Image 1 (cartoon, one colour):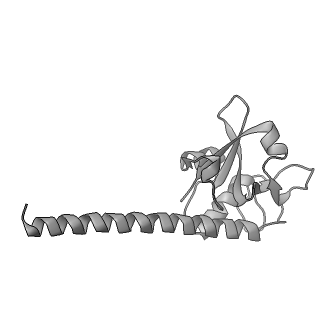
Image 2 (cartoon, rainbow, N blue to C red):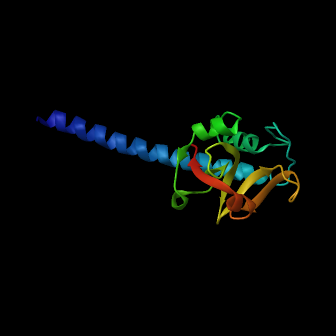
Image 3 (cartoon, helix red, strand yellow):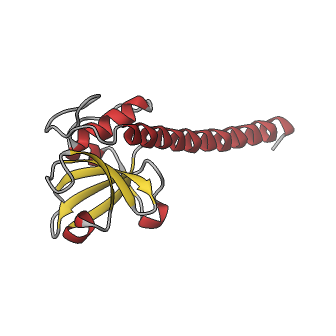
Length: 154
């Protein structure tokens, strides 16, 4: 191998490494911005089919939060699940998403945004906390009654 080929190979390898780092940093920034947007929606009312900025359903909150962060998503929970990648509980970070399904199924019907320390922000349709965007412990009602799938968007 001549010097010119070696230099080009080294340049390509370093460019790929830098591009990979930039992509991971960009994705982390998108998640962080989505989380910040979701947090700013706390207390706003729940309405089935609503995508903000004044009312939300669960997937509408995720769609709105990620749109503000620069990532376009579909509205339906199942379609958002398809756009995400699986992560473990130990890999979850602020802004990752949590999909819920009935035990024994893979039919995801609810989604929230991970808020750290075992909490999520989600648009809650239930009367117990009021029909609004709330921050709630994942291990509460949701973790006890449904399967939780941690996923990553962006």
